[in-house]
Amino acid sequence: MSQLQPARGTHDLIGETARRHAHVIDTARRITATYGYEEWSTPIFEDTRVFSRTLGDTSDVVTKEMYTFPDRAGESLTLRPEGTAAICRALVTNGLTQNLPQKVFYNGPMFRYERPQKGRYRQFHQIGAELIGVSDPLLDAETIAMGHAILRALGLEPAVQLEINTLGDNESRSAWRTALIDYFRRHVGDLSNESRERLEVNPLRILDSKSAQDRALLDDAPAFASYLNDESRRFWDGLRRGLDSFGIPFVENPRIVRGLDYYSHTAFEFTTDKLGAQGTVLAGGRYDGLVAEMGGPPTPAIGWAGGIERLALLLEAPPERLAGIAVISMGGDTMNAAVQAVQSLREAGFRAELETRGSVKKRMERVVKSGASHAILLGDEELARGSVQVRDLALRAQREVAIADLVRVVSEKA
Image (cartoon, rainbow, N blue to C red):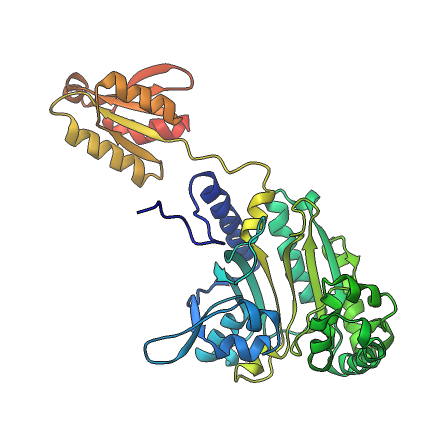
């Protein structure tokens, strides 16, 4: 049997990779908690309608990228391709639309059938945050500021840039949509085949096309700014003032779009030039129509998601592995006391391991190689005195302490 490999587009999280991954999640969890967010966890697979109905039957995610399969009862299920729809489904399912606002943090694997590239996998992982039940440009700015705070805490602030845009309200977007259709119909012969299909269904998605022939038409396409009504302009102005209040630098990018009907007003991306084509590391926007799509009441909301793999790649160095403490039993009757010592250290929050294999010399060699900070040596003579030898491996110093004082002494050294 040939050696088995991970499925294409997946990867194992081991060692440094796992530490980077966990550091991104732990940092995001800590920062979002300071903003009053609680963590939710939704199933990895959902009823297919959760995504097909909300992401749109013509979107690339639904038509090309979803992992969809029938279960044994014939129900259509889909591995979640993104987190926001699942969070909104959970909001409605659990009757929380009457208990707003909800501030939600989540993390976990997502699944899309895409061509694997650096930082992009078919099973990828995201952190995300959703503020549900509030329509206020200042809180949009605060939600973006929270994402910025996570990037700063990860040491990534110099490597990223915030780009923002407005999608306006339904009235503004409808007028702009009509103008776009008129414009692209006049140039239909110059559009890619994919954009011709999009023209009648969702022309906004043409603006996000990667096709060179489509992008050549965008400079002369109708600008959304000409179609913003007064309410949309007030919201847009409020967002920019809010970002200024939070001290978050930004640039305006009219090319940022969200092509689905339930998106409105705020759209933003934190981008980098450090990862080649995969330049977006955290992005989101306002989606005031999504909860209603799930069967709930009209509910304003804004959120974002960040790719853990991409963020982890940007980290200059992986988090250091916590230095351990090794406990070595050196006498025939000392093992029980060694077990009690290692357990007391663990209960105090230290990483502590029993070293039992081989001679004392071999065990000490392994302990030093492991990067441990201390070795606790326990022989028959020490046991008779109710003590242990504490060896500081960095200072190469050793002293005898009472077993009862072990945790206190190690804590003082730490």
